[in-house]
Image (cartoon, rainbow, N blue to C red; front, side, top):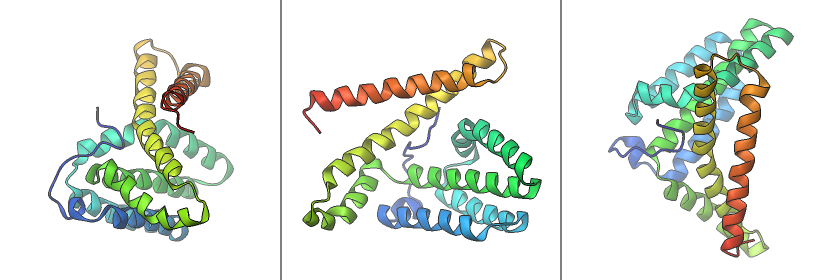
Length: 200
Protein backbone atom coordinates (compact mmCIF):
# COMPACT_ATOMS: atom_id res chain seq x y z
CA UNK A 1 0.00 0.00 0.00
CA UNK A 2 1.30 3.46 -0.92
CA UNK A 3 1.04 5.95 1.90
CA UNK A 4 1.60 9.64 2.32
CA UNK A 5 5.29 10.30 2.59
CA UNK A 6 6.42 7.56 0.16
CA UNK A 7 8.93 8.87 -2.36
CA UNK A 8 8.53 7.67 -5.95
CA UNK A 9 11.65 8.14 -8.12
CA UNK A 10 11.18 10.05 -11.35
CA UNK A 11 12.58 12.64 -13.72
CA UNK A 12 9.66 15.06 -13.92
CA UNK A 13 9.93 18.82 -13.43
CA UNK A 14 8.62 18.43 -9.89
CA UNK A 15 11.19 15.75 -9.09
CA UNK A 16 13.96 18.08 -10.19
CA UNK A 17 12.61 21.15 -8.40
CA UNK A 18 14.24 22.20 -5.09
CA UNK A 19 12.57 20.80 -1.99
CA UNK A 20 12.32 24.24 -0.39
CA UNK A 21 10.53 25.65 -3.41
CA UNK A 22 8.03 22.80 -3.40
CA UNK A 23 7.34 23.19 0.32
CA UNK A 24 6.79 26.92 -0.11
CA UNK A 25 4.53 26.23 -3.06
CA UNK A 26 2.56 23.70 -1.04
CA UNK A 27 2.02 26.11 1.83
CA UNK A 28 1.16 28.95 -0.53
CA UNK A 29 -1.29 26.85 -2.54
CA UNK A 30 -3.11 25.59 0.54
CA UNK A 31 -3.29 29.11 1.99
CA UNK A 32 -4.55 30.49 -1.32
CA UNK A 33 -7.25 27.84 -1.59
CA UNK A 34 -8.36 28.46 1.98
CA UNK A 35 -8.72 32.20 1.35
CA UNK A 36 -9.96 32.33 -2.24
CA UNK A 37 -11.97 29.14 -2.80
CA UNK A 38 -15.40 29.84 -1.34
CA UNK A 39 -17.79 28.58 -4.04
CA UNK A 40 -18.20 25.26 -5.89
CA UNK A 41 -17.16 27.00 -9.13
CA UNK A 42 -13.86 28.19 -7.67
CA UNK A 43 -13.40 24.74 -6.18
CA UNK A 44 -13.72 23.29 -9.68
CA UNK A 45 -11.00 25.64 -10.93
CA UNK A 46 -8.74 24.66 -8.02
CA UNK A 47 -9.42 20.99 -8.73
CA UNK A 48 -8.33 21.45 -12.35
CA UNK A 49 -5.10 23.13 -11.19
CA UNK A 50 -4.34 20.32 -8.73
CA UNK A 51 -5.10 17.76 -11.45
CA UNK A 52 -2.45 19.38 -13.64
CA UNK A 53 0.06 19.11 -10.78
CA UNK A 54 -0.80 15.43 -10.33
CA UNK A 55 -0.32 14.77 -14.05
CA UNK A 56 3.00 16.63 -14.11
CA UNK A 57 4.24 14.68 -11.08
CA UNK A 58 3.58 11.37 -12.84
CA UNK A 59 2.38 9.63 -9.66
CA UNK A 60 -0.75 8.32 -11.38
CA UNK A 61 -4.41 8.21 -10.45
CA UNK A 62 -4.16 4.87 -8.62
CA UNK A 63 -1.42 6.13 -6.34
CA UNK A 64 -3.34 9.33 -5.65
CA UNK A 65 -6.50 7.36 -4.87
CA UNK A 66 -4.52 5.22 -2.43
CA UNK A 67 -3.29 8.41 -0.75
CA UNK A 68 -6.79 9.86 -0.43
CA UNK A 69 -8.65 6.71 0.62
CA UNK A 70 -7.55 6.66 4.28
CA UNK A 71 -8.86 10.21 4.89
CA UNK A 72 -12.23 9.72 3.22
CA UNK A 73 -13.97 8.73 6.45
CA UNK A 74 -12.74 11.96 8.04
CA UNK A 75 -14.05 13.90 5.04
CA UNK A 76 -17.44 12.19 5.33
CA UNK A 77 -17.64 13.19 9.00
CA UNK A 78 -16.70 16.80 8.23
CA UNK A 79 -19.18 16.90 5.34
CA UNK A 80 -22.00 15.74 7.58
CA UNK A 81 -21.01 18.28 10.24
CA UNK A 82 -20.91 21.14 7.73
CA UNK A 83 -24.18 20.03 6.17
CA UNK A 84 -25.82 20.06 9.58
CA UNK A 85 -24.66 23.53 10.59
CA UNK A 86 -24.23 25.33 7.24
CA UNK A 87 -25.36 24.21 3.76
CA UNK A 88 -24.32 21.78 1.03
CA UNK A 89 -22.26 24.38 -0.87
CA UNK A 90 -20.12 25.16 2.16
CA UNK A 91 -19.79 21.45 2.93
CA UNK A 92 -18.59 20.72 -0.61
CA UNK A 93 -16.08 23.59 -0.52
CA UNK A 94 -14.61 22.68 2.89
CA UNK A 95 -14.27 18.99 2.08
CA UNK A 96 -12.99 19.76 -1.41
CA UNK A 97 -10.23 22.00 -0.06
CA UNK A 98 -9.27 19.30 2.43
CA UNK A 99 -8.99 16.63 -0.29
CA UNK A 100 -7.08 18.96 -2.61
CA UNK A 101 -4.66 19.82 0.20
CA UNK A 102 -3.99 16.14 0.84
CA UNK A 103 -3.55 15.58 -2.90
CA UNK A 104 -0.98 18.40 -3.12
CA UNK A 105 0.86 17.07 -0.08
CA UNK A 106 0.92 13.64 -1.73
CA UNK A 107 2.40 15.18 -4.88
CA UNK A 108 5.15 16.93 -2.89
CA UNK A 109 6.07 13.91 -0.76
CA UNK A 110 5.97 11.56 -3.76
CA UNK A 111 8.41 13.76 -5.70
CA UNK A 112 10.70 14.78 -2.82
CA UNK A 113 12.96 12.66 -0.67
CA UNK A 114 12.42 13.04 3.06
CA UNK A 115 16.08 13.94 3.55
CA UNK A 116 15.71 16.77 1.03
CA UNK A 117 12.65 18.16 2.80
CA UNK A 118 14.34 18.02 6.18
CA UNK A 119 17.47 19.61 4.73
CA UNK A 120 15.47 22.47 3.26
CA UNK A 121 13.59 23.09 6.51
CA UNK A 122 16.70 22.83 8.65
CA UNK A 123 18.58 25.20 6.35
CA UNK A 124 15.77 27.74 6.57
CA UNK A 125 15.73 27.54 10.36
CA UNK A 126 19.51 27.52 10.83
CA UNK A 127 19.85 31.35 11.18
CA UNK A 128 17.48 31.20 14.15
CA UNK A 129 20.03 29.04 15.97
CA UNK A 130 22.00 32.20 16.73
CA UNK A 131 19.12 33.28 18.96
CA UNK A 132 18.90 29.99 20.84
CA UNK A 133 16.28 28.35 18.63
CA UNK A 134 16.61 24.51 18.90
CA UNK A 135 17.11 23.84 15.19
CA UNK A 136 18.33 20.25 15.59
CA UNK A 137 15.49 19.33 17.94
CA UNK A 138 12.94 20.81 15.56
CA UNK A 139 14.48 18.90 12.65
CA UNK A 140 14.27 15.71 14.67
CA UNK A 141 10.63 16.42 15.54
CA UNK A 142 9.85 16.98 11.87
CA UNK A 143 11.56 13.73 10.93
CA UNK A 144 9.52 11.84 13.50
CA UNK A 145 6.33 13.54 12.34
CA UNK A 146 6.96 12.64 8.71
CA UNK A 147 7.71 9.08 9.77
CA UNK A 148 4.53 8.93 11.86
CA UNK A 149 2.22 10.02 9.01
CA UNK A 150 2.48 6.82 6.96
CA UNK A 151 2.38 4.72 10.13
CA UNK A 152 -0.88 6.33 11.23
CA UNK A 153 -2.43 6.07 7.76
CA UNK A 154 -1.49 2.40 7.64
CA UNK A 155 -3.04 1.90 11.09
CA UNK A 156 -6.29 3.56 10.02
CA UNK A 157 -6.39 1.35 6.92
CA UNK A 158 -5.80 -1.80 8.98
CA UNK A 159 -8.50 -0.90 11.51
CA UNK A 160 -10.95 -0.13 8.70
CA UNK A 161 -10.18 -3.44 6.97
CA UNK A 162 -10.70 -5.31 10.25
CA UNK A 163 -14.02 -3.51 10.78
CA UNK A 164 -15.28 -4.48 7.32
CA UNK A 165 -14.05 -8.06 7.71
CA UNK A 166 -16.06 -8.40 10.92
CA UNK A 167 -19.13 -6.76 9.41
CA UNK A 168 -19.21 -4.04 12.07
CA UNK A 169 -20.73 -0.61 11.61
CA UNK A 170 -18.60 2.49 11.94
CA UNK A 171 -18.45 3.84 15.48
CA UNK A 172 -15.89 5.67 17.64
CA UNK A 173 -15.41 2.56 19.75
CA UNK A 174 -14.75 0.34 16.75
CA UNK A 175 -12.56 2.68 14.68
CA UNK A 176 -11.36 5.74 16.59
CA UNK A 177 -10.39 4.00 19.84
CA UNK A 178 -8.00 1.45 18.23
CA UNK A 179 -6.37 4.22 16.19
CA UNK A 180 -5.81 6.36 19.29
CA UNK A 181 -4.34 3.39 21.17
CA UNK A 182 -2.01 2.65 18.25
CA UNK A 183 -0.96 6.32 18.11
CA UNK A 184 -0.11 6.31 21.81
CA UNK A 185 1.90 3.11 21.41
CA UNK A 186 3.79 4.66 18.49
CA UNK A 187 4.54 7.75 20.58
CA UNK A 188 5.83 5.54 23.40
CA UNK A 189 8.07 3.73 20.94
CA UNK A 190 9.49 7.00 19.65
CA UNK A 191 10.06 8.22 23.21
CA UNK A 192 11.88 5.01 24.21
CA UNK A 193 14.08 5.28 21.11
CA UNK A 194 14.99 8.87 21.95
CA UNK A 195 15.75 8.03 25.57
CA UNK A 196 17.91 5.09 24.48
CA UNK A 197 19.93 7.47 22.31
CA UNK A 198 20.16 10.02 25.14
CA UNK A 199 18.30 12.66 23.12
CA UNK A 200 16.22 15.33 24.80
